[in-house]
Length: 566
Ligand code: AMP
Image 1 (cartoon, protein in one colour):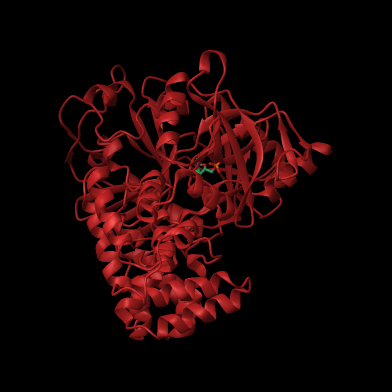
Image 2 (image 1 turned 90 degrees about the vertical axis):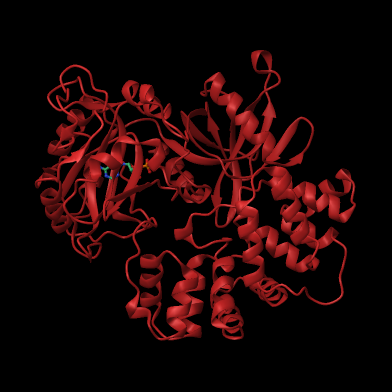
């Protein structure tokens, strides 16, 4: 682990990408493939490979307490160190007692300890294991162990650079490494294949989420049609993005944050289990009213929200808030990876897959009373998995009409897609455009919270939030309205558990929560680091479906600012 930590220090010491990848490549080559594989996972800022979905469930507060105990420093001294570094790993390196020589632990042993921590139940058991681990290592090792545990090394090294380093250190081109990593969801396994010269043998591993293709905003119908000849147009549904994997009768569903959400929607696996082929579907889960119109329609996101984040969904909840899965893409079917095929072809295969005869499976009635009732428990065409309708538009006028119709159906707006485009996992390009007509919104990350006033005294209701400027989060505003009392109470609890620095009247919190913030306009201002301030900001919703890295950038803020001037 000492060698890995030293390599990380060298990576942090340069801003040049080529030098970073060279340091990583040299380090990887100096290790056995087994140890290099685990190191590659850590260097990507994760304790475990993506596909495993194991999480440590160790918060910043627990790590803070452990560092405090092991260092014997006062709260005041630790806070002062935190102010200097802004990173608990770096604080640990400064305050933990020195040891002579590196620890006995290699990356593989450290990951074994991580597994024990992940498996332990409750903060006390986890705390004891974390303490045990950190007391066996040098301050420098502790620095990178803590950074890996918090999921962010902050040394300017992304997984994409680790892929480059693997291509440099072993066999294979960068494209081959990227592809293997995408298929396997495991940078460590990818490294082992590269070391053996077997990258081409990487097989799609189902049941780990692939990256989601993302859309860029279009400001107008004209702009939306300016990037490609013909446009495939779909409604933009206001729910949560979901990737469903189906093979051998097993179904698992993943959110955009790559979390498994199958349990939140127990009625969907039943509906998907009848598909005739193994498949990976991409779509949006929405709350659905089976009573409206012929086929029903989506209902606002707030209805769906009641079903999110629950471990167990009661039958009553399934009945009260029925859902539908609107499927708009197909990434894999019957053994073939389809992402490189054009959307038009993927769409056709998807049509066949969803319209073909489905095996009779036991389907729980979705609780729709009224028009859609089920007379028996055996149902051959479950209505809750729906192919999202695709329309064509060749002119801005046609697009405007589709837009009005989409909004009349209660949907947010339109998605305009290039029928010739491949599916590019994890990328935001101009092949998918989203058209919404509303005041601008920004997705921001909460960095600090304060206690409220008046009726909100005693709860953390004032949030300071930021957008990305490179790999830094710069503040852009502060807002204190928009959420319900219940949401504020729940958020307060989370913030207290994830405080990294208590400044009395305000708490600096782990930058994990993403909010969608609406505002009337934007101003230049010195008040915030970003150089902008938002006028009348209000929180539209908590974006539990987004990770901090999905939040908006200073470039996007600048675009909005420039745009409003016209
Ligand atoms: P946004 O969350 O505002 O960045 O918009 C992109 C999101 O719109 C996607 O991640 C999906 O969750 C959602 N969405 C809704 N309908 C569609 C659709 N027909 N095609 C693609 N994405 C959609």
